[in-house]
Length: 262
Ligand code: LHQ
Image (cartoon, rainbow, N blue to C red; front, side, top):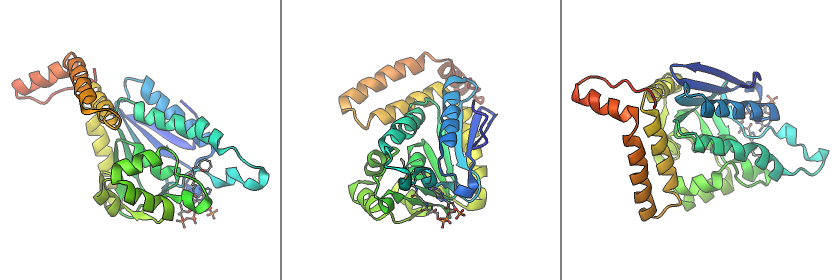
């Protein structure tokens, strides 16, 4: 994994905690942080000891999107498509294709790509004081990091367009009411709740949870017939897993299941 201190990384109880760590810039992405976060998610893909990921930010912000200091137009016309292709799109694909739960704890403001990365995670909690801002409109850009895909799917076109065109901040409670995130919680309990959730999921039947994630994501583009076929195929695979055998045995023996993630 990366040695950069722009992303703090720790593995405990099957949870890989990745903490964006440029607090003086509200954890805006520079190239080093991009590479470090990517390395963290690549590690999560490769290491079977990682059974859940918890993404959060250090300091008072979650992530303010791209570091605009790195993209000063006075230094020449930039190719932002290249930035997207090189950094954001691979990150989004790593998060969505990871067949393990990704929990996001939004500890403060999430702006631009920072907001849309939070929406791409599987279960997103936010501190009640956090705000989500589609800041792109303020600087003449288009929502990226999957925002134009996830926003209309999660909250419908009317709300998606209003957020994206106005760049008005959305508070955490409303984000939860609208279904953009799972839950808004009191600021001082956010990390406790997020850690407990991540730990619980990391002790779960990882293979089955991963396939559940895959199936729900596939529903965005599948017909009902395709989805029914996918459920059949995934259930066949899940039924062959050691965790299924353990889950059923534990139920019949009236004891707690000890899942191994296999
Ligand atoms: C920042 C940033 C920041 C640098 C706060 N950069 N320093 C993809 C492809 C390529 C290029 C473009 O972008 C993208 C995707 C994107 O993400 S585009 C959207 C980029 N992000 C933004 O436009 C958000 C810019 N930030 C803000 O609007 C505000 O900072 C928010 C609303 C996030 C927070 O406001 P406040 O709570 O009032 O904090 P602040 O503005 O005072 O920021 C604190 C510090 O963080 C400050 O530095 P300073 O040295 O003055 O204390 C800011 O300059 C710095 N900072 N965001 N993106």
